[in-house]
Length: 297
Image 1 (cartoon, one colour):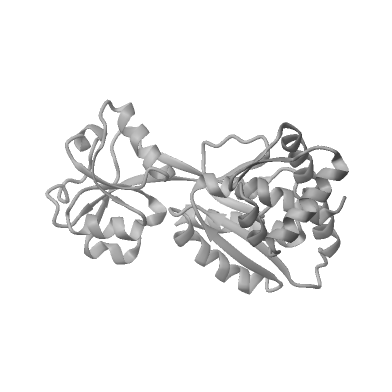
Image 2 (image 1 turned 60 degrees about the vertical axis):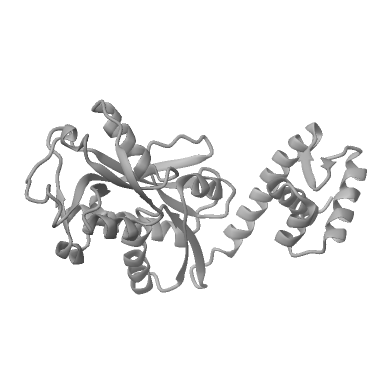
């Protein structure tokens, strides 16, 4: 049994297809199939049902895949620990959800370049579900997401709580109103991000707690697009305070909601068993310091 065979098996399990697994593993499909067949012969068990183009783990395969994932995880940890020399370059891969990434990652990377010159940062912006799985599978060292989140595989460390604020266009009829209650928004047209966004889910829960369902007029993939529509007066939006930009004042007015102000809690997630390199530990301290500065602003 070879480690590369284990990697091939995991690639098939993740892609559900021998051809795509071969592409992901940078090997020809016949070679991958041959190695998996050799492993099955050695184990005396089929690991996958071949259902046309689909590959579905057998019962034995499901057990083996979980063990293989643990083995490769520990091998990766051992290699990372051995290579973790403070005199050499270190690369850290971090992720963040779309409502955090553009407002936090640029400042972090800039600080890191000055204060941790031996650390190189690779970043990924994606929704929380994808980031959680990437951290759990060891593809990311850490990720910035919004709670609540439960996953026994992960360390979840809250680091920042910020209010959510109402955004309206300067020419919107509500722009002259200084304070709003949640019920004041029941008849308004909302501009939101897609259903996969944790911010959208939180806004829907907030409105539901005040006995109304938000009337959504526009859905956007990015906060920048959402702000443009708000600036045009096409609806209102609820955004995290981090999303406010000095340039927004020409087109957008931000207001705080009266009563119970909605907030969101930002957390950094890491794998509980993944070896944390010196570079990752130093970067985490820098990350915490950066969020403290946001809180002081």
